Length: 103
Image 1 (cartoon, helix red, strand yellow):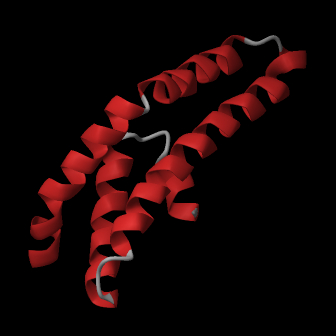
Image 2 (cartoon, rainbow, N blue to C red; image 1 turned 135 degrees about the vertical axis):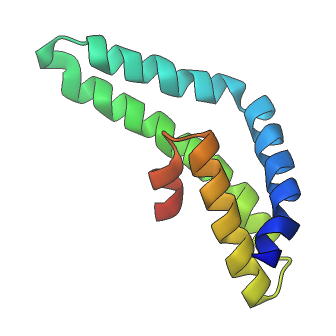
């Protein structure tokens, strides 16, 4: 729990920066999700694939932030930081949470 508090402010700032720098990509995720929901049945699979592609791009960008900082820490701190980061990212960007956890 001490580490989570120690990393909470850092992670919050990292997620703020991610949101600002990737606003277009985050908007694309929502646009492509709406396109999937509104697509005719014969186009739905393709639209879903487009949506998943955008989610994966955004999750990869988040993973790069997480991994870059985690490499600066010892193993125990890195594990705690990664858990803190993933939990906060999933809460703030729920569409990206599961994809981030898989990277």
